[in-house]
Length: 389
Ligand SMILES: Cc1ncc(COP(=O)(O)O)c(C=O)c1O
Image (cartoon, rainbow, N blue to C red):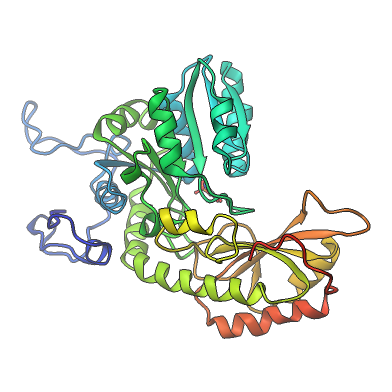
């Protein structure tokens, strides 16, 4: 790939120069080989050796992911979790301490708990909405502040610029999971974050048919991570996955624009439904951190949650009869999804409140609203309190 200097996202994902090396094929071929042979012993003629150490199809994706995130380099992985675990391992040593947001993705939390605890790494979970809470948690041996903004169940943000300022003043590394906002709407490297991780499985893939992950940062940090934490742990992306992800990426800005608009429409609709106590979506002006969201993001992901006045069983009954929302985990594909998460922390037997997570897909929001409106006959309308939007 030989891209013009600083192309904007729509151009970056749509434009490929004519390339004689591939007979002018308009998409890069899938290099479905493990081994790259050399012309002569001392003159390889190219830089590839073995696909665990690098593959042209995967490299094409890495260049584009890096450019979209305004990073010098990216390293792709077999999944988002492979990227997250390698990124953390690349900056943490045995006996270190990590400060991590308390609502971090559960896979990341389990990695910290079950894997890093084995090596004597200690973790303090903090309320990411409070800079005091983050600052107070820092110790002598803190080597990493791990962020995820917004979080993916209650959609709470961290002030990224303030976190960078704090971390740099204490010589602490910062990593952020930027999956929800996508590289289209939030670019944390520009704010000084050291490493950005993505589950490419979500928006970049966009079609719920491929797993992938990426870590993006300076050439120095990525080169170090590539040699040790990527090659030796071996969580390598296949060239076929890279090809599917490159294909998904062609429409990433287009889909993100549509998803952001539809999600905002749905959040606005939910915020007017009397039986919904709270809508957790930073795009709503009533969200407690909306101002920060506007400051550090230029659009919104498709995932939100609603808190309904009712039991988990009532929530399941509502979700089971939805026509356009399928039931499941994950997000970022073309399909709308609903997931009953469980009771909210302040739910009581007298006043049960349940959390339902919704991914808004590419369907027509008018159909989704018509479908979702059945909620009014499943839950009682009670007095609203502490409504965020
Ligand atoms: C916010 C977030 N980060 C990371 C991951 C892990 O990604 P993957 O499933 O590609 O390993 C997920 C998966 O659901 C996620 O929701």
